[in-house]
Length: 82
Image 1 (cartoon, rainbow, N blue to C red):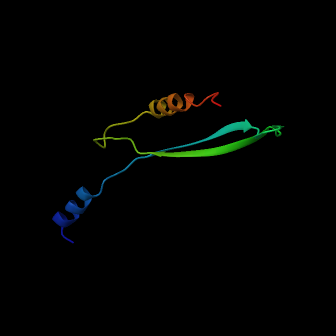
Image 2 (cartoon, rainbow, N blue to C red):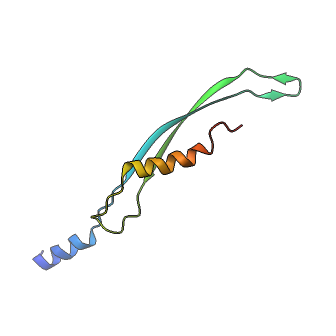
């Protein structure tokens, strides 16, 4: 491959950075029957987010704190919900 061909291939390759966030959500509930309520029991869900920030330039940096704050604000809406 010529130098110009190799250069063109390198230009075509895009570097993609991603942020992987793994967290757990704990919740408990009981099933309600017509004649009463079942035993309260817990569940744990694992949530994995693969986030690819919309970076327009490879020189841009996205702070982890900014991503975590966005996710935290979104999940806060679910806190204490029934």
